[in-house]
Amino acid sequence: MKKVPDIISTKDLSYIEDMFNWHFCLCKKCETYSSLTEDETISEYFLEIKKRHEKICQKLIKILEEAC
Image (cartoon, rainbow, N blue to C red; front, top):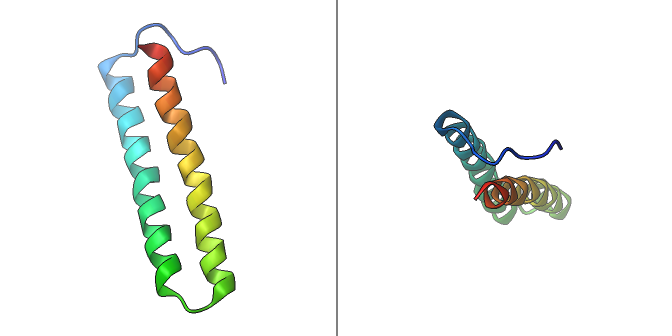
């Protein structure tokens, strides 16, 4: 990833917020689907997907922290 600029425009901030919300929503859905399925393999798959999206959320938060 390239260096984060010192100032993030409102448009960039809005886009980052949208990305965060998409991934956070997917985390919640995967967790729900994992708890609803009776197949352990599928449940683990949903949890793995959730972990991937949590990492993306953490990266987005880090970008915002670096810009502040």
